[in-house]
Length: 254
Image (cartoon, rainbow, N blue to C red):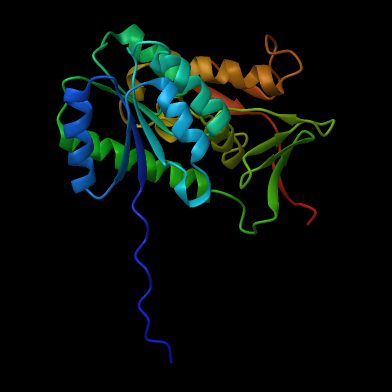
């Protein structure tokens, strides 16, 4: 009989990127006390270096990212994170205008927190985004070698890989992946903007209907023959959007 106690789960790893040391350092200490493993960076260049070095169990679970930084700004780094790294992002910024928030959400950020903020609220938002990312990752077919197929397209949820009818891999961001998963799990159902934003970006995103419209437009450009005359993701006037396709689960080759 083995009485060895199971190892506790590793704490979520956060990458905190902000050039303002007076905010970054005490915030990093606070988040560490809340049970997170925090790595701090003062610039986008330093963050990119740390991201290149992080792999496997050392991969970051979420990035807290300032927008206004010397050199490369947070918006540019966010585009890289959501498209190449498939990583959740929360913006921490003093830019609180609605248009700034919309831009952040449109390029794929998962949430947007305006400085100054209450640290406890930030912790709640971090945990909410991590739960949402975990639900999306677990919202795969029952078997690990299953995928979704629709109109000769195929999505492998475990690898987050979208394959077109010719067999080519189509790059999609983490937000586009979550949006497509929402449609695949609810085919031929009308999903209004509030529901889509809650499923894809959560919490305050419902304030910005344009964010979901732009993400749908981006996804259409990836999967529609003619994105100006969409046949797969249809607009339901006054209601929202609907995936007008049958979806089935297929077994992938081993």
